[in-house]
Image 1: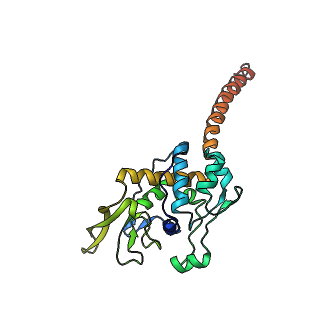
Image 2: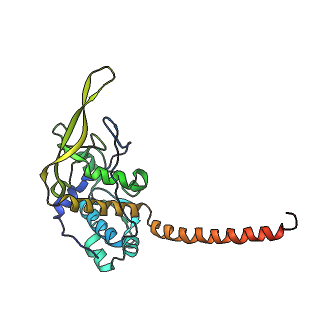
Image 3: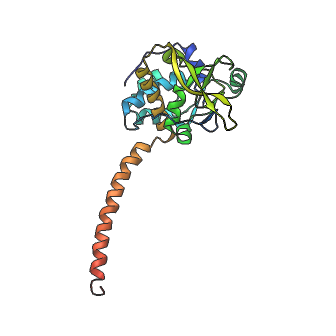
Length: 254
């Protein structure tokens, strides 16, 4: 299994931050083009890294109710001993679902509401949105957590990956209005303070987490896609034989 260095548990629970509030992926000035995630559900090494990082940065506040530890271990080829020692942070039973250790009362007190379950977030929003969202934080001192997000303005969450990505500053530009006036709109973000990872490393880190969330939303997805190819080939071959049989039956008529 591919491993990364662990964060102290005190930081891990703070990873409440990866809350993805419900709502349309719209920016203040309208719909914003999403970045391409480039995930691969068949990349087991990426899924292993994503599972490890999710459990360290996200599971303190976000559950994956519909995914069980033993199913994850089997699908991602994680040995039972490694699964129990490194990934089972909220349960001692491998058949349990992945639940958060944070109580609803604490989450409501700290974040204003309970962070959502992320079991189906990739199916609801798509991997490109999740990838863009986790790269879209920028400094905004007007917000309670001191940050905002390009792809979901006023998200009620901190940027808990800031020490990895670094801090980004917003770039505004004047946009003409129909009445002849102009207003400042957010067009992009620039790096202000570098983080522990390079931009390329951070992209890979986020891609692994998003890839894992894609798997969590449909654990059978890779097998379904693989089986689908054989099903389509079978139907194609069957169609050829059915067509030839039809011609044989109807040759005297035509």
